[in-house]
Image (cartoon, rainbow, N blue to C red):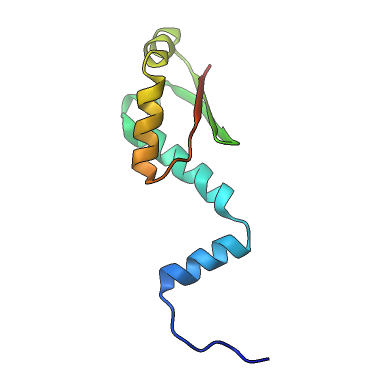
Length: 96
């Protein structure tokens, strides 16, 4: 068996590793959570739990007033999250 000895960049090697080992979903979950909390410092104190599954971000909030306020800007929140992530990862946002 002949091995390819051409040098590749570290980012390319890591990308291949992530793809080969099907780690993208797990990395997306971490990245989406970080992006959510980075959008607004207040999100940290109002968010009781966060779950990302099948392109949907589920957010449990401890304030019905805050939840109602955020519900009016769901489209903008999704856009800002995806801009922060650099690609379209979140397609739906459910606030509970």
